[in-house]
Image (cartoon, rainbow, N blue to C red; front, side, top):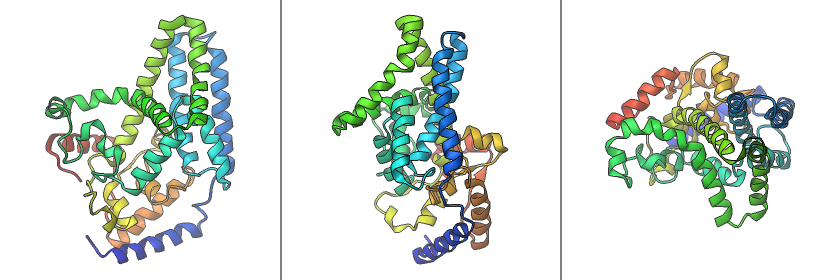
Length: 323
């Protein structure tokens, strides 16, 4: 590990360069437009259910749910508005009310545990998911670990079901009954509308397929961010500077603007971790500046294509070797 104080100085220099371009400021105009269009699309979709086939309903709400998930993520990072209460309020709408995920649980799991202790084998629950197959810990299932090279890709289909379950579990255990009420209200929107139109089995089938598609989409977005990158000893994670930790453990995905949209801006994961308050509308120029800066200073900066990231993850599953 290089000198921590040197990395601290490097990060201060990089942050100053980015700040001079006003790229760390919130994006209230873009954010407001995004929220209005997405909430409007959700309401419009509830009326569409009566006029289109189940297949189109599934595709419509799959795409919309993924986007609402990205919006919730942005809001919880305070990327849209200078007033944190506005971010807080709208994150309840997009997360709890519309897609049934707890913003408080996500704040704890993602903003605090994951961003602060990225790829720590003790603290970061993201890297410990899937029965710890990406850490050096043995896990609970010998069968899953013995066949993880194959089983891992199928398990991604249940990711969203797990997120919803963990959300409700967190709210109940922590007695956040106000937020729990908002989350339960989500059941009276899409699920209830589908129940009225298709009855119970039809509702379960449509919701189930939507959840599978959303789960697979989010799983592939999340996994390429850090899986296969260096695993940090949790007892030593605080010895790393912010810049050193995030560049060691994060991966960027190269590609056209469509990649940026499909990934909700998380394809620039290095910069997102360095500057989590920076909006997806500003992250591309920040990425260009950060890559150039890292090259100047000889700092690790890992950006590859999506297919290469898949190969790296497969290699980690098979051999345990990381980048």
